[in-house]
Amino acid sequence: MDDKFEIGLEQRKATLGAEYVEKSLANADDFTRPFQEAMTAWCWGFGWGDDAIDAKTRSMMNLAMIGALGKMHEWELHCRGAINNGVTVEEIRAIIHVIGIYCGVPQSLECFRAARKVLEEKGMLD
Image (tube, rainbow, N blue to C red):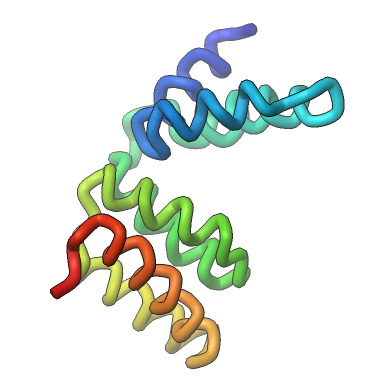
């Protein structure tokens, strides 16, 4: 393993939670392990491994981009990570509003559904 993997592993655990990351790596097999390792090094080590943009801002960017792509399983996962990185309910709402403006109301409704699930799980909605 190289430095980017180790840096990425630390950042991935900090954002998504050590339990989730360790389970993902433990469940990897000969077929999926190379991708898990490369993604950890590339996305989390290279993409998140510097101090140019703080983790909260990166999480907000991720929510906008993943929401635009309509990848709702990943959006839900990164919504949890965004909360771990300090993104507030109000900021999540604002991100979803921007998704609605640029990607359409149906996509923003999908994001609201996913956000509600995560926020309710975390006891962050009344």
